[in-house]
Length: 411
Image (cartoon, rainbow, N blue to C red):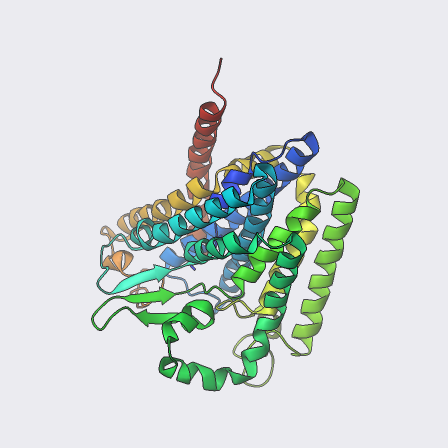
């Protein structure tokens, strides 16, 4: 996104609720591992959101800028996948499908409203609702949770298989995209098709604002449903769970290498060839995120499966730091965007003596490129990111402690 990702990228809702879901010591360990993974995702996510306000383009032209953006691609898939996992764990704790369904529907609608109000203002620091509204990652998570409120009534395996089918098969339409995109505006209920799959700008009424649909429902509902099924894996004995994670991870990575290497299936654009504007390695990794292609999801979720057992074993200051972020994903997400935005204003003041009006334009879409002389270098970008992470750590640590005291008051 730059609202890109996730909690890119805030299942916040489902995830935060699941953090206290386990009744046994073993379950608590597995959930702690999810907190570490989720925390790692959020640390990476902040890099790209700092990049948005730095004025650097997404994906180039230099390898440094490319990989600054590329590493954050892992955020939304991991976050949405583990949102499904957290939903499964919470459902298991509640033992009441009706209560869980109501929870998902209510919390999902709350996230959609949050995206269109609080987060919209945080990204722009303006109230220009007459021209621009954003449907980012939180929007997609919210609607996916609403859909999951219905799906959880099905057997867990059926939910997971349906999710895998959506993820694997949605690129079947790729050969027809050159004809579908120009025709989308002529299709009945074209706005619904854009929300479900195509994305882009939707004019709300004849004189209403444009809703910028960055994250669509398909394939993200498939990712969340697959993560829901994965929750049953997290309840398995450690050895079996780790073995399944490694198998899933290496199979996904191998499938990505084969499908991408031979341009077989799973991405609307191919890599290589005389018209490629990127070096071969960068072109190979430059898969489609909007909407997320199968190759994009294999490239990002494959390593996630491999890392789950490894991150669960992580100890020391790194693990404790990531856990702090992972325990309060909703708080982190809502806070980090305006904090980064304020940091960009401070940088503008220090560098130029004034606040550039570009910082109050409609980020991250439908916005002109940064004005001449504004764009940061990578060193400044990462310096600002590090300062922001330090502030977020203390804020999240305080909030996690406050929540713990409220949940378990001293006697």
